[in-house]
Image (cartoon, rainbow over all chains, first blue to last red; front, side, top):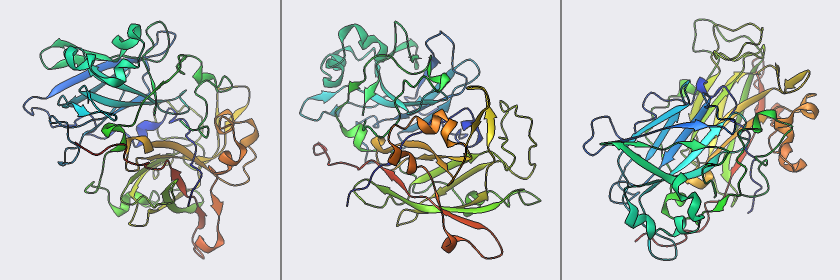
Length: 176
Length: 225
């Protein structure tokens, strides 16, 4: 049996009524050995930050597995300055469809007023240069845009990853 | 993406202007990260979370309704044990949210937030009140048709869906760019719940049914190594 799917609609400005969870940003509890924080701003094409967006992340555990009860999921509404933050561990590499290895990454969904459907991107890590070079997904991204997919270490355990919806530095978004 | 979803670039909905990405999307082959997804089998959702009308000292004001249906995938399979989150305006068309400045009354007995897990057959059921229509600034005399926001996970990253459920015979559809952003007429109709006398509880509340269809889970593209 084949059924027609239900269309997407915008999340609108009132997602704060139910979607933010107290433990949403914590893929792992604060203080977990090896935990990292990924922080950034969501920015529109006029250079304005989005105070009403929601960022969700999904990832493998440190060994690149999805089958060992690891929560893997993070959710952060942006604050008045457009910042989201996720506390997690850096995932392991994964086998890629068609062979090879996918470099450590998180899948990311961004929702907001003005987005009629989610937009999807990936967070890779700038300090995994070797693995990134061999990643088949990054290889499909124009070389001059790959930097938009790299989280940069700003201090120990702290990564920065901004999401630009439009403009010169528009983040690469994927068709899933 | 399939052609069912609205285009991101849709000027009639003005908020898309600076938010819809302009560059072409890059195809993403489905690997392990895409074919898996969060599971909330032990999530602390309680039965009370699915009743939006009785969690305060007085009952919520408005037309009491039952909204129920199944979550399925496009292969026709039920999606069991998946989290549904909903939010909505009150009967007067006002959200309990700091950025809603529509001068309609708040209801101290209604917060508009609901959650439930689908059962083993993908069924869900909420008790709430019918939300009111409300004005917004998109264009002159713009009004949103009555709607309930739905957020669903499914079983894979590719199945994640946020949408809105509408009510039958709403006179406001024709002027609403969000509803009309879905290009296909039949797809728009799939966002509209059906009134059903059979779901209506005598002497108590009106029944609406609405099934939600997520993408198929698709074949596993390769074995986990």
